[in-house]
Each structure stands twice: as structure tokens, then as C-alpha cells.
Length: 148
Image (cartoon, rainbow, N blue to C red; front, side, top):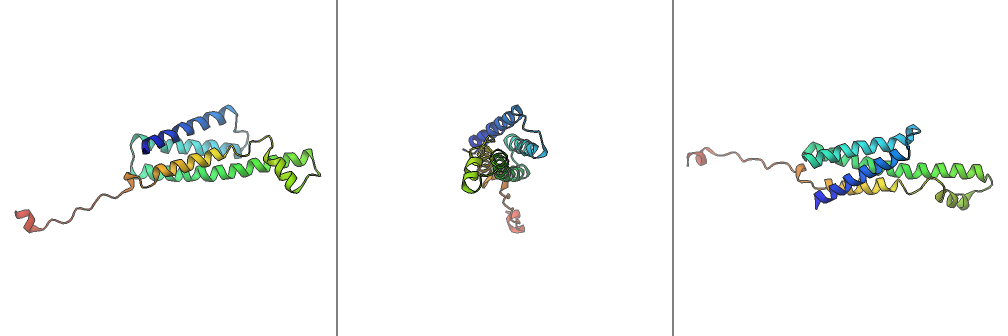
């Protein structure tokens, strides 16, 4: 099951990278942040798919947490951009009316939620991963047992 979930994460990462690239989502530093986060996440996911190790799984977990934070920040930034645009169009609008208009604005408010979903899915992949388990310590063999 873990490998299937990792496959979904990889598919989602590649799809989001392609979509943001096609949308030219790199006009500013803030727009480049999701591309960097996706690139790091893709690298760590590929490393786990190729050869899971303690380090690669920890990197996966870190980059997946980064995706969750990036997605939450993206939702806020999309909302803030829409709110600013709506204020320019209708300076007298405020309160709940402004919030409602910003939620339905041109910049898709919930699109960065895909980052949150992928990040959480990736965290499930890394949860209690076998590569994170420490190998059992060999108990010291007594001299008596060696003589037998």
C-alpha cells in the first residue's frame, strides 16, 4: 500500500509542477516558492522510491511538511491578492461582502490546497516507515555460547 501511495504522491507532484510551469507561476519570488517546494518534494519522493533509507524518508517527511505549509501560505496569498483586487474595483466594499468576493476572485483560492493534500499523503507514506526503524542490536555472545 505504501508504494501505491508514494506513486500517487509522485504523480501529483509531477502534475502540479507541470501545471504551475504552464501557468507561468514564477512572475515573482512568492510565485516561485511553490515550484521550489515541489522540486524538493519530488527529489525526496524519487529518492524514497529508488532506495528508501533513513535519510531519504526523513527528507521526504520534511519536504511533505514543507508542502503543507506552502499550501496554507498559498491559500492566504491567493485570498490576499483577491481581496486587494476587489478593493481596487469596489473601494466601498468591506466586511463579509469583501471576504465573499475575495473567496470567489480570479486567483483560485483553494488551488494551493492541493499542496496540503499531497503533503499529508506524503506524510502518511513516511509514517512508521520500515527504513526509520533501528536495526535490532545484537546481544553480546557470551564466551560459553561460543564454546558450544
